[in-house]
Every structure is written in C-alpha cells, then in structure tokens.
Amino acid sequence: MKYLPMLAMIGKKDDLDRTDLIFEPKLDGYRALCYVNKDIQLISRNEVDMTSQFPELAGIRDSINAKSCVLDGELICYDESGNPNFGLIQGRHQLGSKMIIMQRSTQH
Image (tube, rainbow, N blue to C red; front, side, top):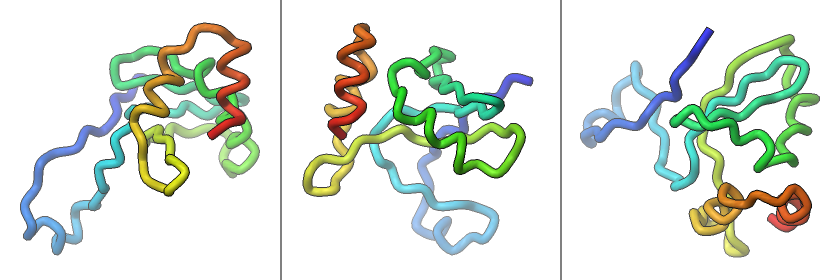
C-alpha cells in the first residue's frame, strides 16, 4: 500500500484549542515516511529512498514493538545548542559516498 506523508497546513490561533487537530511545531527538516518491516526504509515526500543517507536510523527497528507499521515524521538535526539546524541535515542528504555517510552518522 502506498502512503503519502502528511503536510502541514497554516492554521489559526483558535485551532490550538481544537481536540480534533494535533499541533506540530515546524522543525525544518525532511518530511519522510518510515516503512518498518524486517528492516526500515525511509521515503521522502518526493518518493526518494533516503534509507542509505541515514544508516544510524536502522537501529530504531529494535525499539518498535510491531511486526510492521508506517511512521510519518520529520527528519531533523540539532546543533550544539539543541536547536534544529536544516544545514546539518541538508548536508547529509546530499552525500553520495557510503564512507562519508557512515562517518557523518556518528557526528550528530
């Protein structure tokens, strides 16, 4: 089954009081679906497979208590001050060398 990531909509202040909506802060990263089966697969909202760009996320499989599922979320990197930093994740997404990707996956 094919899924599409949920995309944010511009809301109004009154929307924060609604119980049928979930508030999600804008964190400035890459929106992706994470398909969880035996392994995980990360697919961008443009349907690009990003799994090899983020090898450290393979370890989340052990913490998911389901045979399979699809997670929808934002891939983000935090800087040293604990703030989301798009520049850090943008650099990761554009890497092609497996060796450099593995090196960067342990830095942030």
